Length: 332
Image (cartoon, rainbow, N blue to C red):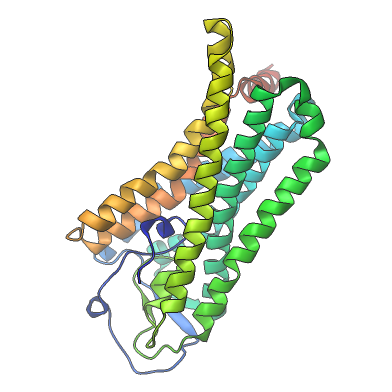
């Protein structure tokens, strides 16, 4: 049973044919070979530049968010604490993937130790699940702020925010923990070539020469637990938020209140909507070349870490004003 295309976001790969890679005779290799983007090896050097630009933008943007929130006391509140958690998550996801990817594209460094492969796989899964959980926490913050504005500070205290953050971390860590253990237990006797630039659960499991249904079923379980529950909770939160907004007496009040949700909604859309795109491509784009699947999957995986700080930096007045004061002060 195949995992659903959402797993691309947590590091999985669309099906590929074993005939597209070389086979060899060995058992349980100590290293894997990452191909990068199969079929585009001749232009790897040039493909690396946009990926490097996306990574540098993500690093600069997310560190700017962290610095701004830390130095501006007026931003020491639940929404910005969750935003800092999102920034750290995006930094870990992009750093787990891009440095090795660039070493493949620029230096042809394709080998990765088996343990390092499992570590990369775990971090990609864990922090991708964590990002979805953080969006749920941010939706809860918006729900309390709009539906119970007078009780916001008493409901979302610092201890409550810390407990929510801890719950998000524990959920992601525990749900992702079986993935490397499942990968480690399978025998590998056909090939050690992974047709993409990073280790991914299904991409590695497909190299095993045994029945790996357990891995596929568990992957589906994680997808339904994470995406199913998280999207339902976010949808319920925004249903109540919209009801509260439409009950406001004036149009200006409705627009101003809804404006506080725009950044969060944009970040959610940039995270979840591509899942629908890949679902459609997975089901109806079977003739799409493998290199196109891999290339788009990598772009999509690195897009939220780059876009999130831009979205919040542009749309959040407090962050924008703090940055303007910082640069104005330095310029004088």
